[in-house]
Structure formats: structure tokens, C-alpha cells
Amino acid sequence: MKKLFTVLIITFLINSSFSFATAGCLQALDNDLKATKIQLAKFSCKKEQSLKGNFTCEEAAPKGWAEFYSNKFKNIENKIFKCLI
Image 1 (tube, rainbow, N blue to C red):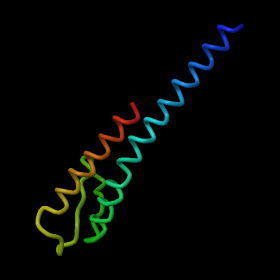
Image 2 (cartoon, one colour; image 1 turned 45 degrees about the horizontal axis):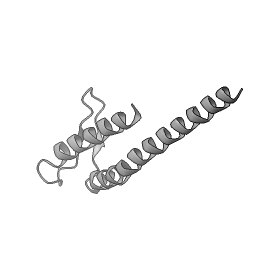
Image 3 (tube, rainbow, N blue to C red; image 1 turned 90 degrees about the horizontal axis):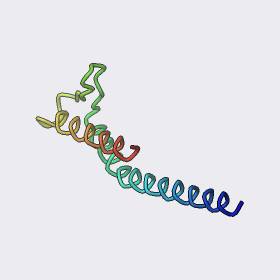
């Protein structure tokens, strides 16, 4: 009985520390994601419905704005997936 109780406690501790690590990883990306969304909103950038999922912006946006933030958004998404694995 003591062994079962010990195994349950160890399993719980491992799972809780893993969830804290995942939360820390995601929290670090949260500010970057918010900042990227703010920059995309400056020139009314919208995500295309294509397979690539790039952004398109108004004509007033600086040259390369949509491409830069499309790449940045994809990098953040990839980091989020790595946090969850």
C-alpha cells in the first residue's frame, strides 16, 4: 500500500511540474503574440484563407510589413506547438 501511495505522489508531482513548465513556456510567448497582433492591426492586416495563411495589409502598410509579420506569426505558432509537445 505504501508503494502505491508513493507511486501516485511521484506521478502527481511529475505531472504538475510538467504543466507548470508548459505554462511558463506559453506565458513567455503570450507577450510576443500580443505585440505581433497589435502590429498587424495597425494597417488592418488580415489572414488569408489560403493554405499558407499569410497576411495581407492595406496599401498604406510599409513594404514587406505583411511578409515580415506573417513569418513572425508562423514562428510563434511553431514555438507554441513545441511547448505543447
